[in-house]
Amino acid sequence: MSDVITINGITYVQKVMADSEVKFNSTGEAMRFYRRRLDLSQAETAIEFGWCNQSISNMENNKTTLTIGNFIKLCKLYGADPAKVITEIRWAS
Image 1 (cartoon, rainbow, N blue to C red):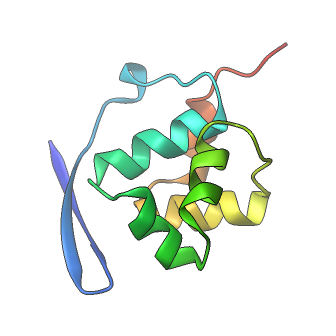
Image 2 (tube, rainbow, N blue to C red; image 1 turned 180 degrees about the vertical axis):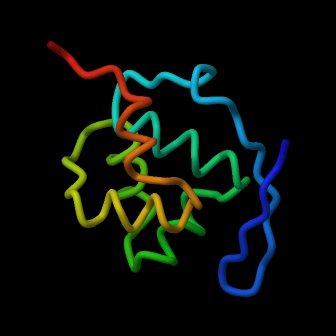
Image 3 (cartoon, rainbow, N blue to C red; image 1 turned 60 degrees about the vertical axis):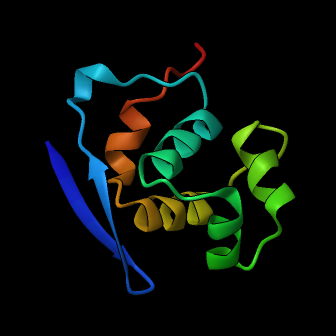
């Protein structure tokens, strides 16, 4: 199954996976998955946010904290439902 999303006039086709298929160990890992699902580079994502590539890399590697506002903006950019993404992350107990 696939879904279509348009970013800055460019149409991307993304694979839609069943909820049970995806579990992430961190928020950064989830954001990397959703970015790659659209075939977006870190540079393309950085341009959208006005960030540098290193900021995207640091966020995806959990070297920096992702604010809830930026988490929601990234989810929107990636065409992902923030509530669904949160359920896909294995939270430490």
